[in-house]
Image (cartoon, rainbow, N blue to C red; front, side):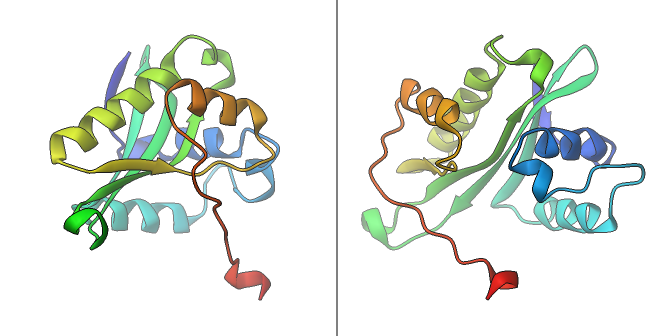
Length: 152
């Protein structure tokens, strides 16, 4: 298994991972071809030095992904924080340790950059994910809230 930054060629596999769960299936659009908006988004991420999409590759296939964003802030005495989003592992690879390795890889990158904390959110409808993150040392210290602009 290797970790690396995502490329345009990885996008169809990443989108399939994002769509491969009950929640993702309602908001993602996998297919052939995938919508151009995914390419635009990846381009914006790749052009932002505070953003990256990582993939875990196994036998030449995308087996996992996450987005890592570094957020400058005034809190924590001007400390930077890392935000982990869009964590997915291929169904065939779940339980093999890829998810834990990906999160630890992201934490190591945040630590090396000097971040003061790493944060993430997960939907309350994903109890297994909540247990997974808690096992890795994340604490449910805050309540996340979202305001969907297309629903307002």
